[in-house]
Length: 592
Image (cartoon, rainbow, N blue to C red):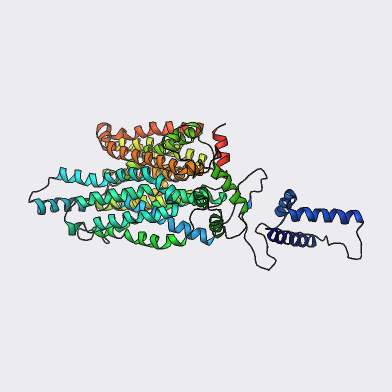
């Protein structure tokens, strides 16, 4: 330890001398003898630096040295550093190759999550026809269309039930197995589920699809481990950007699933099982790559108490051996607000709604409900149907749905950049997304109402809103509708895309926001409750949208407008800004 202190002193002295020379402040000539008082003062300061007592002077020198440091051997050493604000505990760092590899490996689970959301959309009609055929061959009875649709709806809906189950047990797995190892184990569910769905024609029992979708839903619920890992491993200045990558890979997964469902690929009666089978490929890649990346240092230190291993893992992730300050911060976080380590303090789900945890948990639950009841999943679930109602052919409706997926990905890329932008914060982006979706739902109701009533004047008032979409979509619509109806049709579709764009902002932030506002001892349980809430709300929207739509028709989205009004007020009034803040600072603000 003394040796490292001496090396640090030599390196800092070397930097100071270089800076002085560069500034033209050469050191005094050797012939000029300093007086005794100066010699005594220098010796005293030298001793204080060596003993580590003069920490403040040392920090001042470090701030004066180069940002990334320099090495006496001539090679550069990348260093994590405290924020330039002396009152802040924020650790800044860079996006290292090890961190990039870790993020890539864990977000393969996010890709799987998104892929299995969208993979049932394109082949839905093909699978329904196969269900009827399979039932007739096995039982010698023809299944009526209504029963076949009910079976298909069960296959789709059971995914959400599985997600709720996965969310419920995710906290236990996160704390017992770890973030990385927990994800590694969950791939067993992928292999079993994909086998059941890919070989369903061989089994000739369509209920294996139900079981397979249930298992893959449980896996999807367990992918909450991804934002937990992505929140814990990066330096604070990259936490928002890296945390948003979970949602980005989800949207990419949705888009890929829509593309592979096209008729020229796997969207045919003979090839549709391959849509489910190829999902095993990213799972296999993840099984190979996960053991090669570090476990979350926070988990290793806070739950395992292995300081040495946590230090080694953090050094790999940061690309530097100078991680002492960050390890000290992890030690503080490990003790939690009550001074107990995460391993010693066993919190229950009930504890999450008591004491100091009640208000952060309330905010987390509210954000998850807001994400689902914004109305975006109603659009995503039934986008093809809505596009057909807008006047598109079946084929064009499929391509329009893919267009929604492309916009989803592109806008998520933008949100990854925005979330850590100096001019924006989590809270401001949430408010922007909610207000944008509020406007979109109103415009969508207007468009659907004017379309159903045969009025065409409403289209002219919304020309401004269709400029972006008309470039890519007008040609396909113009072939099937008269000129004025083209405008209304495009407007209607653009409103769906605009809603999707606004959702991207609100879609990514809640997933890592939950991890940001809780200490390590409560983080897993908090994410478990939040995920359960998210999936339960998802199931409610999926079950109730069609009955409500049949009841009030074009005014259905006014229900979501009402919810969005409530959510916007709540975020404005109660949700704190978390960008660039430690968990300790965020909780201090929450309990003011």
